[in-house]
Amino acid sequence: MHNNFIVTNFVYGTGPYLRTTELALAVNDELAKRGRNRLGIIVPLVYGEKQKRIMLEEFAHYSNEIFLCEELGLILNKIFYGDNTYEEALKLWVNNFEDINLEVENFFKGKLEIEDLAGNKFSIKGSGIVMELSRSGRVMYGIKASYGVTFGNISEILKNTLKTSSSEINVDRNIVKAGISLAEELESKYRFICLAVPGTTSCFDDRLTREKEFFVPPTIKNIVLNKDDIDEGIYVTITGIPGLERLYKEAKELGLKIYSNDTETVLGSERKLPDVIFNTKIKLQFARAGWGSIWLSQLSGTPFIAPKFDPLDDPEIYFNNLCIEKLGLGIIYKGQSLADILKEGELLKPRIKALNASLEAKFGTLDGNAYSAKRIVDDFVNIT
Image (cartoon, rainbow, N blue to C red; front, side, top):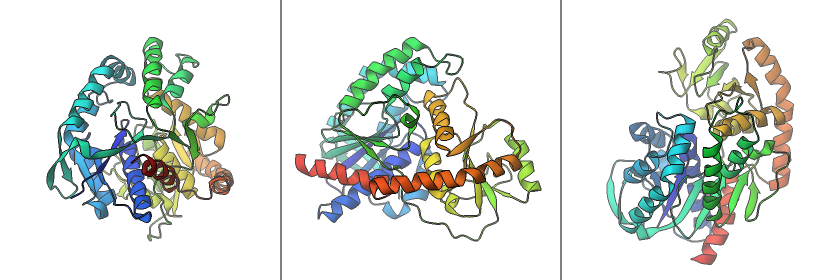
């Protein structure tokens, strides 16, 4: 059993808890290279059995290194989306920020009940937590060695929301203003922030580099080419795209198969994990424009198709949609035929390849987790 631990802190959704776990494993790899012990990784269990299943699928080889904490997950869930609209979730965060932070602070002073991916339960002291890794977290954990590694700063997303018409992003501007203050307070607590490029702020033309901020490549696990013998097809990671049922029909008419990680929702699809996007037989990916999904498409050279933004959704997605069009990473679905999307997607591939080449030339790698981990461990070993 581990004596010391990393704890992850993240915003709502599946991608953030996966990305922070991947980063924590990269930090452990870097610690091991320097002759230091690997740390246990504590991940808040926010989404119950579904999260357990996904974590086991993704990280089965690290079942004795990754631990789930249900109580911490319940605390975070108080201010997450759930059945709320984005505005309701933002209001919950603003109104309960101080109470949630105090609750977390007290929580870490006592004992934590944790469970490994094999279901074995343990009790540890909160004082054993020596590092926090946050991906746009909404709560201050109060850990000394705290690092932000993100696709975009919450404060900047909210500030740019104020500059956007309410017909485009429909959220109470007074709540947005209150959220900006809280986000700035949160962001100031990190020892530094690793900001991935491309990311949400890549579409902000007037953006200035902030103090204690470092640019890094996409922070997603290093995935190799998938060589499974599969039929040509498209990958769907989320539904809710208006008219997608028509595209399913068109896909069949074009002889394309539909793959998804959720066959219950995407009826008629074949189950595959998102890694299959790195197979040359996958022609397109349909998904809501979160950076985990966008980066999978970008790094695999697979054009990304996103639904048109819903004005009641998270403003981050609005800016992400702008970004993928600006950079030529993907297409916003507005009812085009699948045949037209496929043609347009082919035209994007050289731009995606050029972007990846420029990032590799700049950073020497496209592995943002390993790149960030080196900087984090450099700092961590100096303060511990």
